[in-house]
Image 1 (spheres, rainbow, N blue to C red):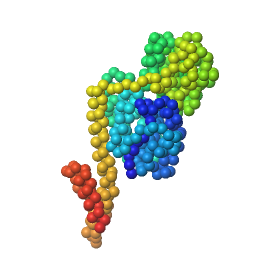
Image 2: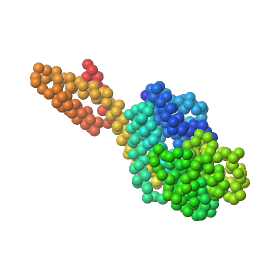
Image 3: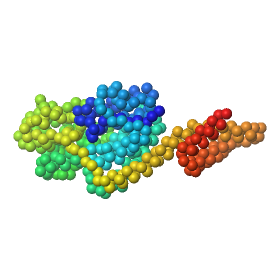
Image 4: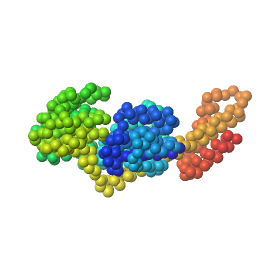
Length: 381
């Protein structure tokens, strides 16, 4: 089987294309159940800026995505390139906002969902967990360096620049998920009066930021009439603000759509006095060369740990064959004697473990694999 990754992100695909491949949480779960039923080890990562399918299988992930949502110009990585790509995603090197925070939580959720569904085996699980750990170390190392940490932070800054400041302005946030909550909190901190829509209580019990007024989702158009700024941040597969229901504002209105699929019908951007930003309008940044080099060094350390685990994982069937042989031979040697079977089994396994696992410290991994293979063949007889 092969380790492969394929998908779309904001650096290589338009918003129109990414919308077609955006999966809701339930749709992603259904997709991975289908992968499990076909015996394909997979994790699907779908966020506002990317949809990526990671597989440890023989099936090409590009074809699997085409089956699900149609054709597109997918990026594709295999083997060592796929491994590095996963770590780059977790590090935030492929994010719209470099080293942003949200991608780690999104990867954790994707991994947890795949584990719960059973579409994720040991290899992808270890790869994702290693990449997430590396991402944490990278953010710990560079948390004191001043930089934007989320698309929400970029959006609030853009709104403030367009309005000449947020102090005393009225803002409407449509959506009370993680991004909506983050935007509401930042807007309040900048001095805006914030209203946020909510359809239902959050499953995690999270409460709105202090100072934010909660209104019914059905009242969003009424609240919009009094707003200077609007943020769209729902998980809806459809527009939540339609041009036919929108009234042209008498004063400047700045709208930022942080959802994919989009929350705001693009035609609203054509109304007088309206400035509309979508995800692609927020731009992409490049990291300074010294910062990227430092991130690469941390990544390399964690990638080496993954390969060390992977090599041993590949050898485990051979190691188990050698262990079983040792147990059988020791039992045969002691045949007819009074001995503790469990103690003998444990002693033989410990002895073999010491020999085999110390071997990889004495020679390179390829030679160790050859030794394990030869010993396993001899054990089979």
